[in-house]
Image: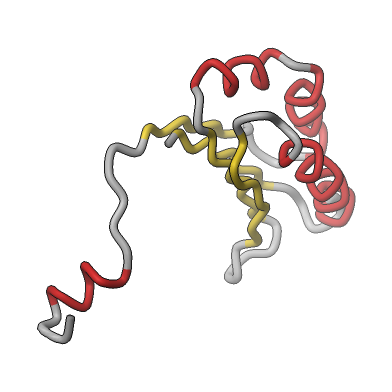
Length: 108
């Protein structure tokens, strides 16, 4: 699995506009062929910090999305930001769930 993480920092004045833009973009991302999940998150300590995460099954499909006009629209939100947009692409080699935590705690 490949995770695309986009970190956005905005001002209080631009927060609502950025949030609305992200909400409309999320539904488009979810329709991409190998995107299994896409969500936007708000930092509970600072509502002007938002993170958009999407999970991809194929790097080729992610690359196609990164070259698309849809991702270009996301890059266009830079005018609403108070600091540079941050983009991270992580490849996940292994995933564990609550059973791993419970086993470590001796209650699994």
